[in-house]
Length: 227
Ligand SMILES: Nc1ncnc2c1ncn2[C@@H]1O[C@H](COP(=O)(O)OP(=O)(O)OP(=O)(O)O)[C@@H](O)[C@H]1O
Ligand SMILES: [Mg+2]
Image (cartoon, rainbow, N blue to C red; front, side):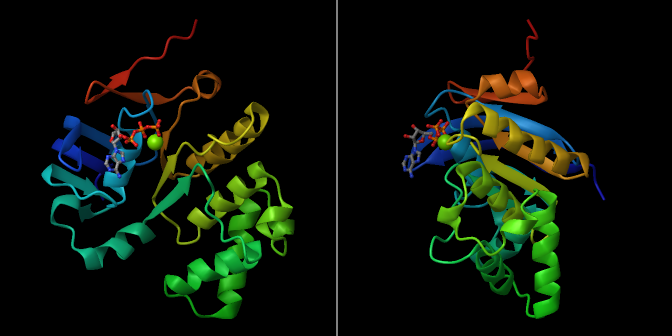
């Protein structure tokens, strides 16, 4: 197994016919925790969308969790997304059903059928984010931070090697953001690779890690100042 879980070479990322990021060259190794920062509109989400094949890679090459992005077929996308856990700013839980049923929905949609196995898996992932006792709650009965922890648990259901989180703390207060980062760091400590887009410089200072910045259609590594 190669060390790199993601590599992009000479990639250009477009939205419609506009270049968002050009000449992207990067390699992310298994087990890394990588931040993507940059002003609004600088291309963080477009970068993430390219990685989970919501935006096709039309220029350059990209290799992610054993898929080639430039040759990826529509039919391959669900299989790619099983190897990647995705977490969004707005949680995206289905509001009309319990936490347990949100999880069951994802498991069934990704080929699970054994009821006992599904229940065991749901308990395992909820336990990882400290939400084991909330399975029967409806999304509106729990706080934003708790919903985000559930969304992280949902992202873990198919044991992804890589988690992509696009501003996962964007809707949360500073204290709750720290709690969510604690969860992501713990998951990273257990060997999962995490790429997280964020605006939140306070979090970067509190949990320093390798950081890439999007600016002027480029993405490049920045060295964090600790003063
Ligand atoms: N669906 C779309 N169609 C056309 N252009 C888009 C689309 N989504 C984003 N863009 C444009 O692409 C550029 C990059 O947007 P992107 O959403 O990647 O930025 P971002 O860094 O994630 O910003 P934010 O911090 O506000 O989330 C912007 O100029 C934006 O207007
Ligand atoms: Mg964005």
